[in-house]
Image (cartoon, rainbow, N blue to C red; front, side):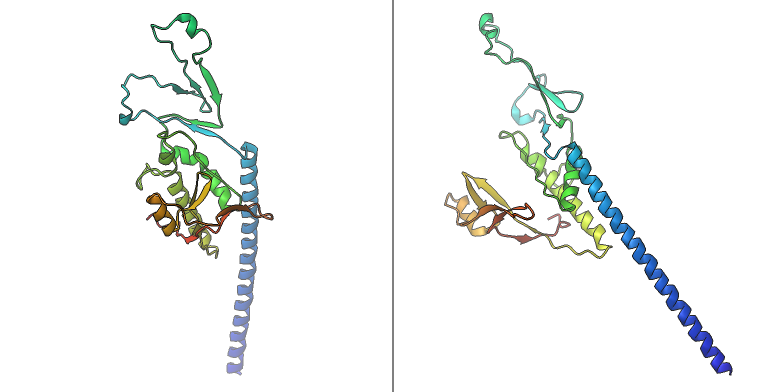
Length: 260
């Protein structure tokens, strides 16, 4: 009788444990469902805000004088960022002292001109502040939206410095900082069971020719003035998703957390 009673108690305890486990799993499933819903809502709200702010935004960054410019310390910049952070002005072009005043008033000298942008970064603004302004686009890309960031300007205006930067400290640019953001996002999603595999393509358009910069044979010939072997490279767009890609370009696996 005692053995049977003990067996009954053990079976009851096991049943209670299983029921509690099922209850815990049900609550866990419920919480995961709420988390997925919250993440979906966050994505929609984040990208709705981006659309309201403008799907196409133009920023201007003013480069400071550098020692190699040979400018004197008292030189007045021609480009003057405004205090509002969204506009700048081109200073009026003064007529030389020996030039005829009538000629200067004839409209052939530049007057002061003002321009408005979505954001203007003055010479004192560092790399981190610039990236903070565009990091929202990186998040949109992680959310599955099509994103393009490009820098445009004359030679020596600071395009490479802004996009690539230098080193691994505060001078690193948008590209390495964006990769760091992608790596942090991947690590965060790993705790939710996600596994990511990433590949990159690296191309340039030169003289209306698409060049594959990850094609070693092609880049070596280009370096010695030869013609590219990258044949059949075409820029295409997927009809269903709208994704733009270079057909035939070399795809290389990449670890966003690898700083090298």
